[in-house]
Image (spheres, helix red, strand yellow):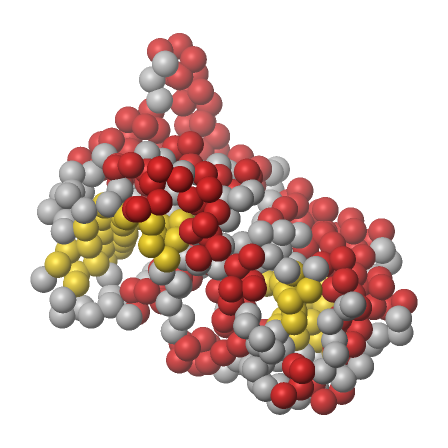
Length: 377
């Protein structure tokens, strides 16, 4: 029996916990015994991982991982310990040049022993922890597109040479990483995220009782964290073009994020006067019933490493329209979906809206009708 430890940052809604969940579900438990060490165990994936043992979180580390941007007057009492610890960390760092977070991670690492392999399922703090664990085989997963500087924030905290392999979730992500670390190319591997199709189809059948969600009109759905990467703030302007062209539709954005990022989207909705056809639904523990009932899924991201939601839409046979970024080209082959520069997305969506045969979900992504002329010149 092999013992493996997976380390990740949090259990919040997002691609990394979801991909780890799918990976763990496929483990051969007669051969591998898996432990999971999550540094901040708050979120919908707490208690949702199978075929593993979730180790207790370290209270100090977990409080220091709370994002200050998410603390407001409404939840300040809940996060008061986190604020106090953050202030204490800053004070100690200035006075003594000691980092209590680094010290705490070292203490946590000393408790992790006897593993045959240790996996940092993301760069940054999980990798920083894994570096300090005594184990002969260490791996780090890359879930970011390193061609974007803002996606490399965790790299400064990661000592990549100590890892046996650097595992990238797409070939596009691997090439972007190699461009930053060409001397470590031999360490890299591409391993696509595992998708549990049965799980997705089963969860898509869950009852959906949401008065804010209606499919009477052509229904567009976008899913993800509300942040600059996902570029949801451009949706209202695209929706305004569709509205101007006479389209009858409703576009739902499923996801949550920092209050300032959500307000950017809401402000754009008001500015474009599309309140009647664009709705920010917020975070949903189970987004699959929404996705299944959509007439099309739309990916607007500026960059991605491997957007799992594209495969999830394909599994549920929902038409896909995606911004033209490297990993999307890798995922969507000819006739698998519409890949279009976001500047021309309104034109492609207008064409989709005019094809009534789409209504009712009878569209398989890789069949005949994707051959119609829907791409801009």
